Amino acid sequence: MPKAIDIPVPDLAGRLALVTGASDGIGLNIAARLARAGAEVLMPVRDPAKGEAAARRIRERVPDARLDVRTLDLASLASVAAFADELLREGRPLHIHINNAGVMTPPTRQVTEDGFELQFATNHLGHFALTARLLPLLRAGAARVTTQVSVAAARNAVHWDDLGWEQRYHAQKSYASSKIATGLFGLELHRRATAEDWGIRSNLSHPGISPTNLLAAQPGIGRPRDTTAVRVIRGLSRRGILAGTPESAALTAVYAATSPEAEGGHLYGPSGPFHLGGAPAEQKMYAPLRSAEDGRRIWELSERLVGVRFPGMEEHRNENRR
Image (cartoon, rainbow, N blue to C red; front, side, top):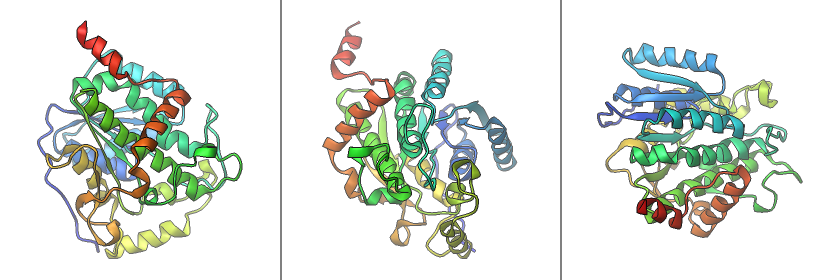
């Protein structure tokens, strides 16, 4: 059996946290750990019934958890806009924002209602649009923004010439491309927030590997049975070999989003062998994420694709003059 791992988390009473993908797996455990530290946690989920079931599971572990299940489909820009507008109307500052939700390796290419390849849309564009729309609340809360990447982002590259994978779909490379894109965004967000004095910090985390439902049977994306990979990961996790558990894998994002030692513009992940499991620690930045020019490129491209812009330097200066 793997040894249970935990980390110290600051008192988060009075803090509002948003965790995407909190209805299952790593996201559920991120939400639970933040709630245990006293945060109120927003849980925007695609399936409200699944979200409420996840909230009940968290309350079994944290009886006084303050949880708020909302509806959000990151694969739909209309859903992202509706959810963000709801929060903006409420006007509550956001203190922690964790871009965690994702979809992994549908066996065949799938397209969203907006015409984007599913993995690129869910893993990157949805989070980009959500963060852009919520920027006023993030600035009001001097927020930590943590974006979850993957060990898959350590290799391959953004598929610049065919972001939609229309020519020759490759499930794993498409996944890696989407995770590199969102990682580049998270780092560019920190650069721009620092340069334009938005008062927020942005960093990256990755969970290593653990037995979650990302690679399990998901008929909705065309995967009728568990993959061989998830069966192997479950076996390794049960024996405490290399792989983490969903609970331990959640801690890297929690650390990146809450620890006084976690800095903006850095990557955090498990500290065990090959960085696949273990307690959180700072990691060497993955090579595909190091280019500031690629960060600028994905930022500007994403603004055009989702139709939402972050304020530029001149707009920020004009706002300060008013």
